[in-house]
Amino acid sequence: MKKALITGVTGFAGSHLAEYLLAEHPDVEIHGTYRWRSRTENIRGFKERIRLHDGELRDYSSMRNVLEAVKPDWIFHLAAQSYVPASWTAPSDTLTTNITGQTNLFEAIRDLELDPVVQIACSSEEYGLVRPEETPIVETNALRPLSPYAVSKVAQDLLAYQYFQSYGMKVIRTRGFNHTGPRRGPVFVTSNFARQIASIEAGLQEPVIRVGNLEAVRDFTDVRDMVRAYWLAVTKGRPGEVYNIASGFGITIRELLNRLLALSSAQVKIEVDPDRLRPSDVEILIGDCSKFHQDTGWKPQISLEKTLSDTLDFWRDRLSASSSSQG
Image (cartoon, rainbow, N blue to C red; front, side, top):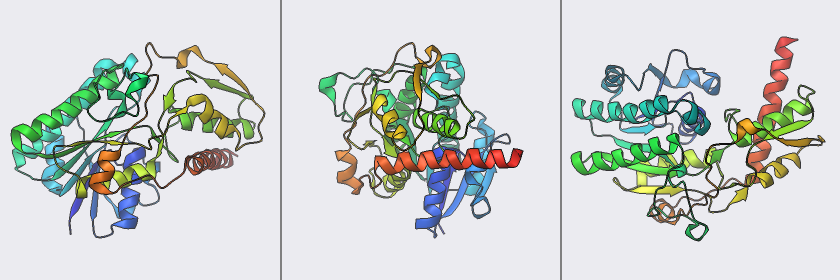
């Protein structure tokens, strides 16, 4: 039986990837890394069906021990400091976690003389300052990162390319554009709005939605489509290549909020929260994924409406469960 190792399996994308593999590829043995302090509610429904390994990306010996124990055929490297605003307040931590962590992973692979296919979860944030005439963005577009997080992802991206060229490591880079859906952390925009709406519906918050920059344009893909793309990347993608994964359609954050509000009967006011504004923001990100479609046949299957509805229902259920347990 072949083995897949998911770094950060307890996270948003990691948990959905594990769930996808369990459902669609039961012949794959699933292993995942987590840290002793990691919350595991995202994998609660299937935790007993995967194998967990305590692994700290920033500790080389820890990663080597995990790889030596698993000897995976595929590695999905999803663990990272992935929240852009946090990279402004803790830039060194973001750079260390994302860059040094990936270096430790690569060096452990080399030291153990393993030969897995490795998917590196890069980001559309790498493109940064995008000019309107450059959309939809192709993989050859200039990288002009506008946050410490984006810089860390550029470094991960180029480091993966370097290890492919220098050592023949079978690395595939996926530049995922915004992906969202159930289980997304509450600090991310779609999930944050959905949580605020569900809180207002439940009488847990005053009827005010607090927002940041509503004029930014983003390209959203459902996380369940995104993790299917990750699988296709390692099974049909070409090592050494970089692929955009995107819907190809842009929407303003304002319109995203309006669509969520249309799914609720709550009457709300909208207020800009200065703490939600960034020192510099990426104004437009719309991706061209034709290269990935050509190599793998992937295209999104889940509509934005379903993504938003499922995300709102997720928060309604979570808040209801929390209220019941406290009562």
